[in-house]
View 1 (cartoon, rainbow, N blue to C red):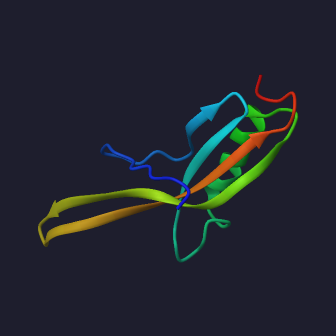
View 2: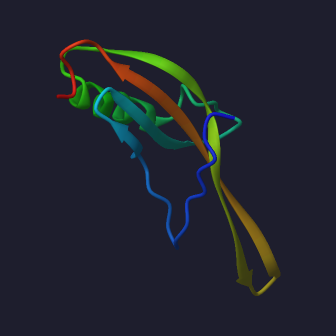
Length: 99
């Protein structure tokens, strides 16, 4: 698995730069497993963030599922587990980017 990132808190974030280095980083975004990560409306936003971070271009190193989050929610019907799925893109800025 690309990342071992557990998103905590009451609400999920959409696109997040979870790791940043001078040469690149890792960005994650939510997706629905049945629809796939490529169909997620957040993918375009994630790639836009990568492009902003690397104005001279970038190379995707890894593009795979990242660890999301699970919450137990109490309701009238009982407890329910809600799972958020996230996708991660590890990228490296081309020479001259991100500086």
